[in-house]
Length: 339
Image (cartoon, rainbow, N blue to C red; front, top):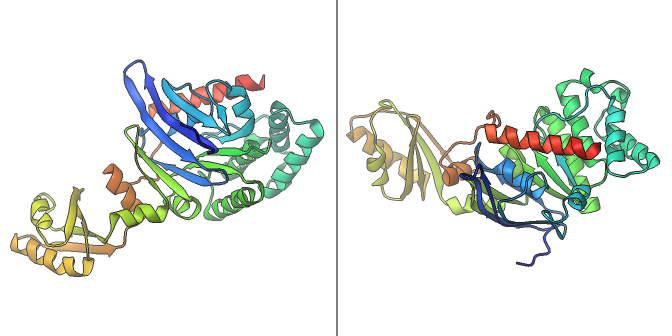
């Protein structure tokens, strides 16, 4: 398959220990200067996929192409064209903020003068100018996160991989970061590949999204396309008798397409919430059960995620054991490359 995409995944497969399939035939294409979101539950294969694309892990089979370069054949050239911002902290606490940036610039082959110039620009953009000469270990969590973002951009990469980039930032910090990224995308044609637990970020910043579950892509499209595929309204019903299953009774109501029962609630996708609700209440009442709560809303990315994965999106989920192992390999590889 030939493609002009900035990021191309062709049937990527990763098997651990000869039996655990973390990624199973993942394929997609990200055009230049696009912000591409990659969503999925914990353990779905997000971190493994990002690591294969960014030369942190070698795929068991399949092919990854970055800016026209085969990642498996030219990993070092790929690494010089991309920036990777890890989910976990990678800043050196025993260096100042400025030193962290200048050391990273040197590792990417920038001259001392260019490294200083880039460090100064990024320190100001990330609102770290006043703390530039302080050791990173004295930074607050938000400041440290902004420093790590700056390190990932110091060599002016063409493609940026962001793994939970705004984790630890307050809403103002998140908005500021995305404003900066959007400016880079417009001015320099930066391509951005992002995983995030903030669905509002994915909805507003990503031009296209892929949802991965159990190592496979289950849906792709723009945020609006994904929401349109659900169609109609989504009604959530809470009943007084949480232990009694009314799934089949609700499914028989006219206009209903799907019913999912979770934690004592019923999530119903229907053509019209306005007409469904009174019929549903009547159906539940005839079964001798009371209704304690009803919500009706148009499909959102949260609903899209639940529809395609069968699970609610949890912002507070931590990394899985596989995620930690992959991230450790990535950090070790980065440190080895700097020696």
